[in-house]
Length: 311
Ligand SMILES: [Zn+2]
Ligand SMILES: [Zn+2]
Image 1 (cartoon, protein in one colour):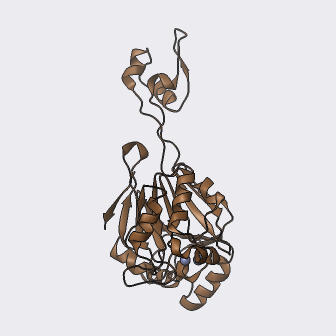
Image 2 (cartoon, helix red, strand yellow):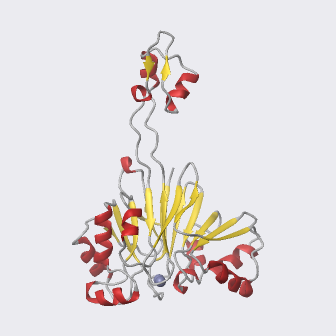
């Protein structure tokens, strides 16, 4: 199952010539989950993966740079004759915001579910869970986590046959984790015929935040952590005042959580990106600073490490 992150907008509070307002698309197989929808997101989608198949939009918090793209995107999807349902999740205040949005662009013509969510599990399917924790940004904010369960280890039919198991329903039972008893009384355990389970992938996107224990817990062992990295060391005080993180602080979170790869985003135009990268790398080596429309390919942990590609 493919898992890609498309960095649609990587700037901080205001867009620049090179960097658009915040939005990250999680593309998992045929599913599309959009995290945040800053101004201009719909055009960034058109320039990359297209507008179709977005089933979920998850908003981190209700600062304009993270949602001002919603009215335009919803309007365009309506005009395009979308019929598939769309669900929108966000922190308290989302209902109120949507009332305003609908006053401006009208009600979406497709099935549209809006849900104010609290920290915890939001969506749970057999394939992944979508969870949130509270961020620390001076208003209700949610960091989002897509978490896949461990994958079953490989089944070795030849080992089962060698132990005397007859191909058929008993093969299925073993693969479902059941122990079976052969006619001669011998017990065969799943571990006798299957490899150990392999970890799934975990992706965390914080939105704007100070470093927090809640995010460290959420991101424990994550494959990828996309963290607020608005400022360089020289503006540490300003990061504190405005509820953001420096690149170094983002790296400290990544280190504490033991993540695989740290992605820095929400970059202030006051700093050179290399400066942010270098300060983060002093704490945590595996740091990526994507440009807009870069794609991070996230393989299963036993198959490689995440790497950037252009759309
Ligand atoms: Zn922001
Ligand atoms: Zn903010």
